[in-house]
Amino acid sequence: MILAVDTSTPITKLILGQKDGRIVQQKDVETGNKLSEVLLSLIEEILADESLKLSDLSGLILVSGPGSFTGLRIGASTLNALAYALEIPIVGVKADDKWFEFGISRLKSSEDDSVVKLNYGAEPHITKQKK
Image (cartoon, rainbow, N blue to C red; front, top):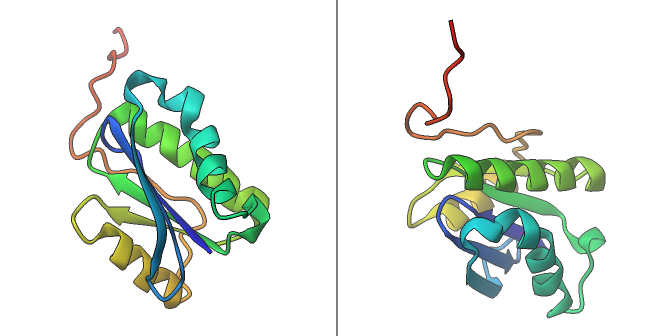
């Protein structure tokens, strides 16, 4: 089973699908600024709805940007950690209408980014170091 996650906007998208691209379940949840508190619970819920566990996952797809600085970082840290702990492949994809399909094609081609690096689309708006 493949888990795909998009945390680039305030609406977190989770897709549980097969390696052939068939979507088993999809959830869109407005997480706002609670993403760090609820992301793992959302992942557990979507798996539990299909009577699955984390160990049933065979690959992960993560939207790597552009998008919200904080949302992308929370998604990346969570999914990169899961990929490492479960020893499964993870691929990063650009946020667009075909992100899930592109991620599936990368996994079917046996691609594995090992660690998804993020593309914010611009310089992050964070405090600059004082001189």
